[in-house]
Structure formats: C-alpha cells, structure tokens
Length: 278
Length: 309
Image 1 (cartoon, chains in turn cyan, orange):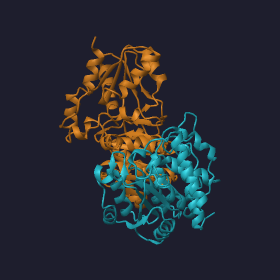
Image 2 (cartoon, each protein chain N blue to C red):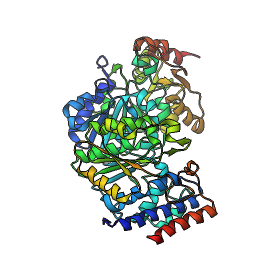
Image 3 (tube, one colour):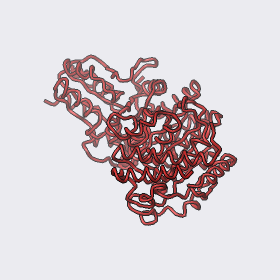
Image 4 (cartoon, chains in turn yellow, orange):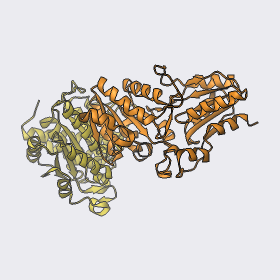
C-alpha cells in the first residue's frame, strides 16, 4: 500500500510527530529532538518506499530498516504504530516498566523492529549484514539504515562504510539525519564530521544531498538510490532538530528531555494546527 | 594416540569445511586473520560464503548480527583479545541482547599464544563473555571435542563464544566420543582429588593424572568444555566424592573457570577450591612451554598442588 500523494505523506509525518510527543510526554523521558528531525524520512520510507506488511512483520522478503540512532525510538515506534504493527495507544506506555516499548528499539519484543539498537555506530554494520544476506540469497529486498550526524563520529561507522563499498551493496541505502546538533552542542563544536558528503563519496558511496523535510526530494533520492548499481547510496538529509515544534527547533536542550504538561499541550497544539492547515 | 598433536584452531578450520558442505546457511567472517584462525580452509572451499571484513572487529561482530537476522548462521572469527575485548560492546548490544544466532569462535586465547606477548594473550575473555546474558561460553580441549563443538553450536539457536588455542595439544578423545553442551566430561573416577580444567589445560591435567597414578594417587579430571551454563551437578558430585578440588585455566584466575566453579560451590556445597591460572596479571613474551612453566600451569605444577598438605 504505497502512498504517492505528497499531501497525504505530509499528514503522516505530522501524525508521526504527534506520536513522538505523546510517547516522550507519557514516558517522562526520551529523545524528541532527533525524533522530530527524522519524521519526514520515516514517513517516506514506511509509507512510500519500503515493501513491508505489518501483518507479516517477519516476512523474509520484506525490506529492512535499521534505526542506528536508536535513541530516536519514539519516531520509529510512532511510525510502526501508524503503519499498523501495533496499536497507537502503546505509545503512551513508552519507557514504562510493563511496556514492550523499551527506551531503545528491541527487535525481540516489538513487531516491526528489524534490529535492536542504542549503542551508536553499530547500525550500518548490521544493515550491511542484511544487505549481504539479500545478495547471497538473491532475495531482492533492500536495506535502509538511518544514522545521526553526531553518531558518525563513532569509528565503527567508517569501518562499515568500507564494508558497504567492498561488497558493492547497491541494495543498501544509508540516510544521514543531518540536524547539526548533538548532546554537547553543534557537531562542528563537538567533533566535526564535515564535510560528510565528500567523506562518504571518497568511501565509495553514491551521495545525494537533500532537504530532509522536502518529501518530493526525499522520494526522488530514494528512487535514484534504487537505480544506482554497484555502489551503495548515502542520502544526506539536511534537517532541523525538533522540527515542527517551535520551541524545540534547533535547541540542543531538547535532545533528550520530555516536555512538561504545558509544553506538551503547546507542542500538540502546534502540530495539530499544522494538520488543519493542510 | 597421545603423541599426535593438533591445535584446536586447526580442528576448527577442518570442521568448518565439513559444516559448509552440510549447511548452506553457514557463513564465515574473519578480520584479516584467516590464515591464523584457519577460517581460510572454509574460504578456499566456499569463497561466496566467506567475508573478510578487514582489521575491523567491531564491524565484524555487527555485520554477523545483521546476517543472523536474515537466517544465516555466521561464524565470526579473530583472535580472542580482539573478539571479546575490542568488540565487547558489539557482542553485548548487537548479538547477546537481541539473542542473535552468531557463533564467535575466538582463537589464540591465553598465554599459550607465546611470543606475541601480553597485548595478544587474552586472559579475560571467559570472564567478559560469561557475564553476558543469553551467551553460551565454551572452551574445548582437543581435536575431537572441537570438531564436535563446531557441529553442535551450528545446530543450536543463540549466541555462542568458543575459545580456542594457538598451541598444538594432544588428542584426548577417540573419534565418535559423545559430548553434551553444558555437561562436563569426566576422565577417571579417582577419589584423591578432582582437577577441573578447560582448553589447553585439560591435556596437562590428564598428564598429571598419569604421573600421580604412578605414585598411587588416583585423581579424576573434569574437562569443563562448557563454562556457561556450568555443569553444577558434576561439580557438586566431585566435591562430595573427592578429597581436594583444583581448577586450572589458561586465563586470569578472576572471572573464568575457577570463579564459575567457586560460585556453584559457595551456594550449593561449600568446599575449598584451589584456583590455578594466571594470577591477575598480564602475560609476557616467551615460548608457550616456558610461559606455562613461568605461570605454573604444567602437569608437574598440578602434581605438586595435589600433593601439598
């Protein structure tokens, strides 16, 4: 069930954001900033690009997704709930003692989560393994891996880039959520990975730089990735941390903090207003 | 048959080839040490199912995890120090927590690595791997047992850490000998003492058993090939039936075989246990033989400990 209408995809992205706020508010902790920055990417992946069926979460032929920046689990959970892997009411149990929705994605207990993540820098290696398995079995499925721009300060990420290149993983698509912020400040201040595009290109990737909140650009980039042979593709998505909630946008303090009741209401009001405008 | 010696890493390479023929889902990964870990034997036969990840052990482990999520049975190999040490977090978070079917076969463990010295002599791996939930931890002693283990771990679900050695050691078991994961192998029924040994130390313990027999002292050797889950029943039985308990391992005395046995004894049948191993220090360069003497890990050292009042 592929949604082609961009306006509809926009509504889905807003719904994902609303789910993020619900989860983090009710969980009284979590990571709203990076979850909001990648909501459009997830909307396009799960509702326009990936071949997945929530009724068959373990289908061997499905496309895979690895949320390497596992702390942005609210975005993934919200997307999976919207897609129908589990009920949206689950989101309000986020991070609580009896909930399946762990602070970071847990593939053993959450339908639709393809890989357990949380310790940064490991997801691309895992995605490579999936893409290699797809090639070995001539299964044809694609693997998507979303990393944070701060996350790629981890050395293992670059090890994995070499592996993706060596095995010519053209069935793999890496997305860098380039929101420019990490816990201690901007990524330039803390430990600059820039220029990300040039680095990835020199590591053998087909690099596409896009506005990560422009759904048409994202769709085009994913389509180009599918047509690219012999090399893996890296989409560098320029995004705004906290996107969609005015007081969270570009604010480093909203990396890993839950809104209080007043902030929660305001965030929801802003997002719902955005829905209505559409 | 004790004169024929073979390193368990060699047995591993040979067993992998057999396994590769039987099971198309077996995939082998290495980190630029295929010649030393002997995974090259598999690589030659099945180049399409062999991945050399290069000098990148963290990537090695997490790539294996990804393959496992898609139904492959990855065997990931490198030296023990790089597997359990360098890639600990990858093993913890990407393999053990999601309980993925990855088989980590780590060679060159312990001081018997020899000349390379402390940086390459892994003495903490049993300790590190044993504390990880969902992990099965093994350390085999000879060719027969290693070949059995490779088949057996491929057939079971879940993560495994198998510790192997560089040094060639005697063949202790006839072909076709039966083993069970989690069930230690008892050699002899002597009541004058028990020597719990693992890996390369089993051969030393068996040699000590023979030397002692000449003096009329009858001990039993327990080859603890599975460190986790530990065989509580055999440990308790030996504590009840024999006069003296010794554990010996080519590993730091903290956290490995001795600790695992002590944990059982403390709770279930409080008995004194003498732990032989590397005494909370790093290794050093030298031949394997000289290092075993230096760290008091020889048959003669076991004989001495058994006879001590």
